[in-house]
Length: 434
Image 1 (cartoon, helix red, strand yellow):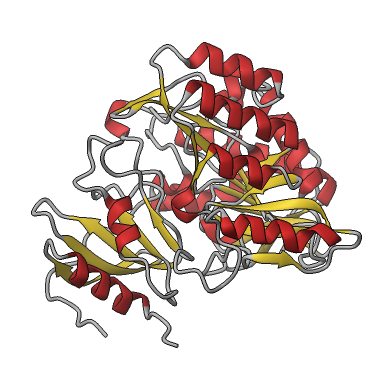
Image 2: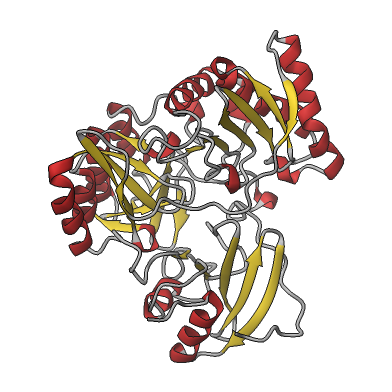
């Protein structure tokens, strides 16, 4: 084990720190491109990560024709295209709109919804959140007030297994006992509402946040002062009751860990099955994307992976083998499992290092804890729960910390020595040995 350093730990990483508050809500979208060092960047919101085969084909075509040919999966189950021309927004928007991926130009950046990726596939959980996902997206796109939400505000739809409830969303719906539990922010207080009214209750909770955040500069529930955030569930409860919804309060702590689907076949299918696949560093070339999406529908996950749905049982072994041969993660033995990184150099001007290259050089045996490599203190796209934090330093080295929730413990610092860095990261992760 690595000994803890006496130095004070860095501030706990904060989700969504990529969008600097001092410059306003600059989170990119499809119609608002972000200028990066490798060209313009588009972030395409895909509620629940759900894509039909034709939609996936359009995204692949957009990456090849308009971008650098790669598709980057995000920690919210969305897709980023990089290397776009500065004036490439209109052409991209036209392609996406034709595929049904841009249902409302005014709401395209606020359609941030993650959902349990295995919901309705494996027989686990308390209910299928698919109907909630469809209804909530339609409600968001029809609500003028929702356009005031920031590009960072996040909805989560959890089928009761606790996977996306653990992600720290601003508004979370949880399937429970035939109904729904509504969580606002990180509080343990949840509101029980009828399942049929759950999507509307989630949107009402977001509107309640907007009222509470007026003149505060808060973009997310966690940005509110403690008393203001603590008062939100009560304010939502009163609004629900005024709207005629029968809601009561319960206590349900948020799960501590957000665990992705295990790579490989998803148990429980009849006639067809699903395949859970990890994507090293969340980055795929167009050929990998075509192979992945050619097997059926897609559900992109908040762990930069995908679930391929509707695969005929007889074809599943061959398709899984093809995905593995293409470099994707299809089983627990991959050294890439649990490894993530920001874009780093040369794509990001703020990055101090090519952290993706460093992460690739350090890949070895699978580790007990996930690891995330960041090119600067912003830690864009970092995971939740417990993880190993590797941050590039100005001197060319890296600082390694263990993060658990809001706590960060500095373990060690390593200079510009790739072998020493790989060894230190493996030790911090608790790498399994043969």
